[in-house]
Image (cartoon, rainbow, N blue to C red; front, top):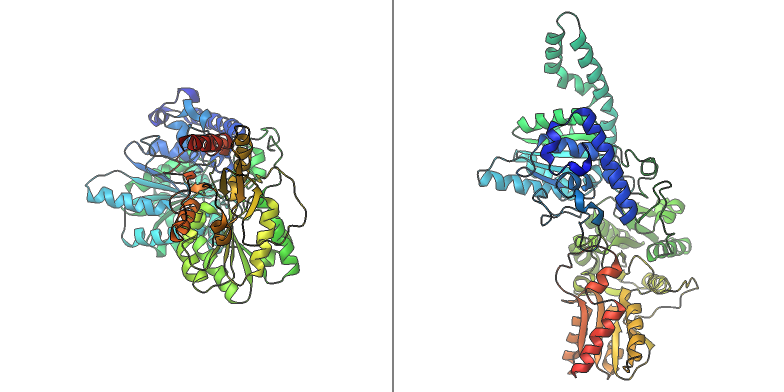
Length: 616
């Protein structure tokens, strides 16, 4: 059967093994081709093709519930659940999301995008089922990388101690985005070493069934005692101690073996964990050889695995390189990240100063408090993290860093709209960080400004947060020594009709908008409002022109509202116009497409200012 003809998972149940293997090959080809065109998560999806097929053959997820942790391995699931004809719109504006979305399909039981949440969600669904008298199965697919996050252990402890009927499929490929870290990774490595058990089991089972005398009886006897025999190869104590029934390890690319364990798990009235050993990038040599680089990738050449467009020097790499320079001259400087060494530009730092890079796994709360401990001990830690993931550690920023006025610097990458959509937009940073007393919040608009801000942070004796977009949006290639940064705004161009106050990633859109408006007879000054907490009170009080604030972030509690509150306190006119983001901004796609849709590209900013001007 051709993939184009699969419109429902029900069709899988009548397929032969040969047909399933052919379907798996077609799915891999379709995923590789689509991600090569659109960008997306590649290696993680290629490793779970057979696993997903087996799940859909054993369970009926139109009623049973399937939850993917993170969801960056759900492409096969989308292809098998009626979305094949729209798969070419994956991660495009207005197209299919790169993660599960309840609004997309009845087969998507829970929206995901951040790690370590699936077991908790599954526990909730299992309890809802029992309370409402339903009988469906609840299955969560959790990567071993997610087990570096504390929520998984809270959920495992809860589910096991309460004997919740639910199934956890541990997709163990030895990686999250980069190589996994921590004690649990070592534990799973030892468990994974026992995968020789499924080779032994297969040989014994097949041999007994072929025995000329008493083969069937011997086969049944072997299966009665195989769990005890398995313990010679696989000795699980951790999951047993949590009262979680462990099954495995099983070859995660063996559909038949997976199906047998899934059917066994369906019969058990308790919390079950199935340990499936997969290979990240399976079936595509480039992804197998470079699973970190092809975890999340821009459009690429299928033959070489290389990006179609050479990556320009971006803000992430700038942050990593500058941090290395600072560390080379100041032995107090250390880097902390939460499973994002590569994504935050720290690969070179990790190679050259491994003793001062601390990757704590997917554990942002621990990363922040551990950094606070480093600072209390005399170090100067820089915590590199995506804006969307730092949200998890709000209490730790407030309680463990800022209340003690500790010199921790937060390097907050991916500030602004994300091509991955609603779960990854970094648009709330100003809103929540500016509420924290004693935290200096800066927004960098260029590589040179980012480097200067990092040096500023190192000179300060208190906490600093620096937010920046992934790409360098300034349009220049300024690699010169940055000037010393002061927490003050800079006027980038003069004007007599209005003053545009722009912060961070939107600054250069505003400069382009001002140029467009000049051609229409409107002369706008543009200020780079790089420090949003505290505001540059001197500059803000002195501007007598009508104010227009622009930010690539949430308006509610954002930069514009901070400016309005300050002006109101001093009896000064509020901003005449505040441009930013409202609502959930649930779309994905290129940043340019999203800016245009939300009225924040240069042309839209100019149009909205022109409309305001005409209304006066």
